[in-house]
Length: 433
Image (cartoon, rainbow, N blue to C red; front, side, top):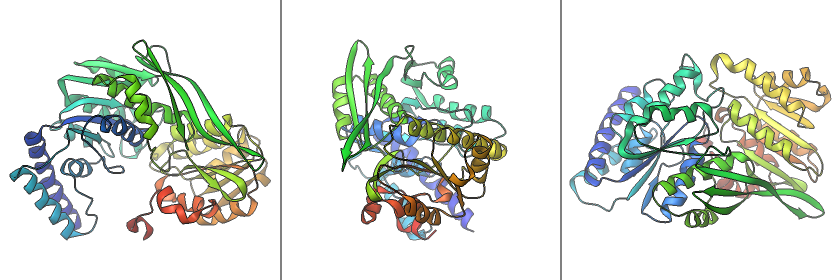
């Protein structure tokens, strides 16, 4: 009954979304990939909203139901039938009456199963399509027979481009870069390699001193494009993973003739999404790198590379939960992560059954057993980490959504009263789970 209701609602609001697009004719930036979609979507919104009336996908509204909801400007009804009925009636009102509507829509487009993006690409018309990265083992690979099937499914979004549209590709990911062969429109690229049209360089970590302890506080880099150059500084986040979303957004802006200075100026007001390598003040003058939104092999590898690159005043602690939806890659990828941890962290704390493979990998790579701790849930792990936390410690916390690693952060953050604005999954529906 529940699935039937969902199917009916999805059919209705998708039909309404198609009619709304036909009536209001907004410009569309569609974003896909396996890593960095939400961060890129938010960065593109920052650039475009500084010049145009713009709406973006809420949170990670990137599914067959999330995309129509964004187009209609409606919230997720979850299990509330009356809210879904209200959404449907609002959709009808958009079609029947003339209402104020955004000039631009910034849409995140995801694929959990084969056919997801192929279906959307048949009715969505995009002015720009931005591809982020795939990585060696993409997320949500569980329902696909191979990595190549994931790449193929994502590539269908190219078909949504208008004739005068622009395909925007990450030049540092070979599979993304090679999608230019499928393009029948203008192509622009971004990345850290010189072959890109929009290039990032001179990346550095910013540090601040507090009570005699030096801790990381943000990042800085430079963007070069079309003979121009501009500096970018982002406080409160870490990792080169934050460079790519801003580069993708800058490229999207340049494709619409927004100049580079205006683009980088808009980044001064950019709020990176929470739970993605955000810096949070920890107990006892420590610092937390909150990367608890989700996890995948490529994202975890980058988070660990960031932890490795940081100057430390005391210990580096990695608190890692299960990586989900990896299918046949599960065991291998967890052990591979553990081997990397052994070379980077002083202390490893794992959460969940699958992450025991991280512990095994770390042990195999020579990490001392006395520095490895395993827990069944994230709350227990947080209480333990809090008991050993000292001034100058840098704590990386990461895991897939199902492991709820934000609960670990809540246990060790200096100001838990701010959790609702700093941590992911703080709304009532998540609190019940």
